[in-house]
Length: 529
Image 1 (cartoon, rainbow, N blue to C red):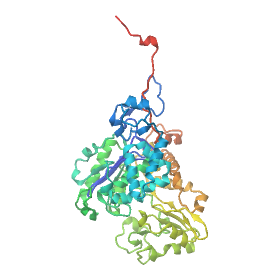
Image 2 (image 1 turned 180 degrees about the vertical axis):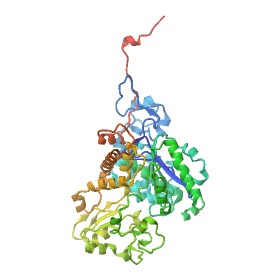
Image 3 (image 1 turned 120 degrees about the vertical axis):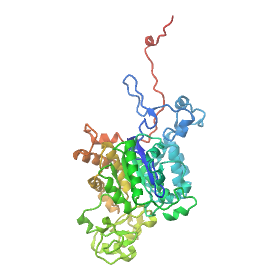
Image 4 (image 1 turned 60 degrees about the vertical axis):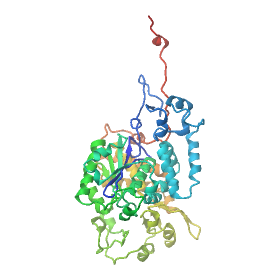
């Protein structure tokens, strides 16, 4: 499980709680949220009704603890005055750096790493050391860093989580904690939690059941919230419980207790995002809780209507979804067509077929990570002679065809969706998240795709605009919530954009300089005998 605290941010979310086999992995923090001063164990100081300068906070922590707290630590960006007042002078080199210089220093180290997993570990280590600098770096180049902290590299990190684990970024709740989940939640140091990402690790990306190793997904999800199986049991490095996955009533009771414990501790407005649950549980769990809690599952919500389903042909890990094929759940049956069973896209030859009767065929190769994609961007553009509009779950590089035309494949990734949805939901304190909110989100994203984007082969806005996309989605969600009486923040804000902006996380450093001032001389005269 991973969670997101405090005030919501546009880079959106962080922190996990996680589970092993027969357990829950949970990450908690706050979507697009900023940890409020209370979360930092700090308070904004105000004397005589005068507001201190923006970004100035007070903390009771002193000395070495400051440099070891990622929410407070600024490294060599602390001024001399701050170092003296906080009792850390001498603990840092006699050098003073701006945050921009710190970013350049991190980038110099980052660029020496060739292996994506090494880059992932470097960034996670930075997040553990200096959270503001981590988010400043992440938001400085979303296109560069999202494939590292999220798919596809996070898939590799999950597979090797026993090696990559450094320090707690969430909670691991197991079946043996049943009846005591409230006690486990007390282990998390934050109190003002706004959002939680929870997974049981059974369907991590396209990699299957990774158990406790799946913690990397809630951690990665919440990093973006804020910026923007069986074989494993034989692995000597595996960090979860080494028994068969728990199912049935015992499993359901564990999830039910978790939901109740979370809302008891953090309130009914705490957003709970279900992540990478296997289909056998995902739909059932969502249907059970969606009208009782503030929750969603962006892996499965927002399905098209019946008429759209007739025009969509879908492929899963077992091949083309057709009628008569075994092991189809109710949700997949909606997309099953009368057609012989075909196992691979190569057999289906679907791209070539679509291009014969569509001027601009849309190809979704959405399986993650990259190695699981149904086809490559180059295959799409080549087979359709540049007419295809391509989107994938994991990123592909630009493609230049023989005739010199260059196309920029986009990511059809839910990272375009969940940060903005969560930001809007948290800001307006929406209690229940309907499918219509996801339809509103889809319309907002579509409105932001330009003719120029389509000409470049993109189906989604460029990834480097994802913060703007998230902001506009959040505003749309807030407007929808108030229009349909779903919001619980009153009075209703007149300026919805300013309202959302007030919940957005800033990676700028706070000032820890004490608020000093004087009184009139006569008021400070010392009374003597």
